[in-house]
Image 1 (cartoon, each protein chain N blue to C red):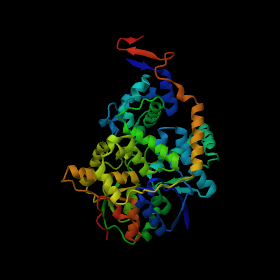
Image 2: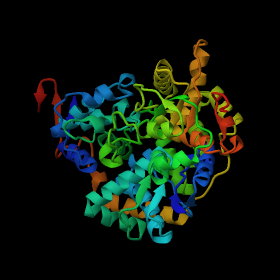
Image 3: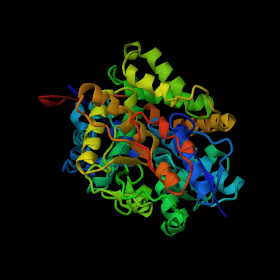
Image 4: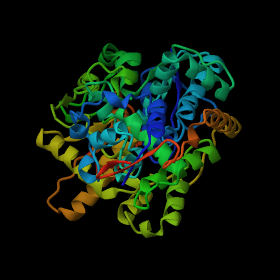
Length: 286
Length: 204
């Protein structure tokens, strides 16, 4: 059985517990063991890279040390797109600049291993599980459900850091959804920004960005939007309440996590997938 | 009047790893930016200000506190300029020199986020929102209906979870020492030794 180190990040232990739960349940059903990094710290997010470049690199590097040296593993699953981006940025900077590596190792207090594979939510299903394996594992195919795969910003940008092949029109989440029996739609806003943590203080901007994204998904025929980032999901989901309050004709579109759809397709019971946590109701999948 | 500070422009370049002189103002960054339309200056204007040494104008722009770090600008720049890294650096300069605007609530969020992370080893979401409301009482009722629904759905975890706090404190302390030893924090805006004052009539 494959074992991946697991870095949940703060959101998965907070507002997006259903991502944590559905991710764990889907991995168990797919015979992959997750080993949570003991005593993991915050990846630093935007707060750290707006304050100290060195600290912003050292925080994820510290987790890579634990994965490689304490846990003896060579891959880490990072389902939060924002955490994933910080891990990849750290690995990129450490490889690019020997001086940075020396300073980071002073901060962390240990040597940072090289070559730890960092997997986002899409990578885990696409590569660690593998699309072929879904053929045998999918017991409840999604029956041609029309979905809009929403990549947002940090799964793919900047490509020199994330190593995404096509940052302007990524297709790897679409591949996973097709393997589950869904029918991903072509749409224009798959990599547009949802407004991220501006949701805490500049709500009107986030509401407008979300309105454009969801409206395009609907216009392109989607019955649901699929997210692979806790902040994207909560923004696209909850801000539709604000949109609806101003525009009664607004037809809400459910926003679900990729891990929830995978879990459903591979037979995880609905009670373990957290469907009831969403503010925009999700019609039951049969 | 404008203050041209070559030293500060150099600091922004060194900190962000960006040579701003490479920008030829094609404005692809601006066209792709999700928040430019809501801001005072747009990314290409920020780049121009940095390029000309007028870092103060860039630091005082509301734009730098609306940038979501979506990385679209850095992805699309034909010159390979990491525009988003310049915004990071300008936020650092703004904070070091007390030039954070009053109408930039995101600055407070970022600060509280960092404090929370240092305190618990992890971000404690409830504490962040509560402290933000206390420090910005005007925001008390912003967003109340949606927030209440999030609470009702059990999306909000009231209990903090701790990371390895000892290691976190160590990392914060050592990083601060190294950052300070670089001397980056000591370039004042308006340094009479090196800066030029420019009025509409030209330099004097």
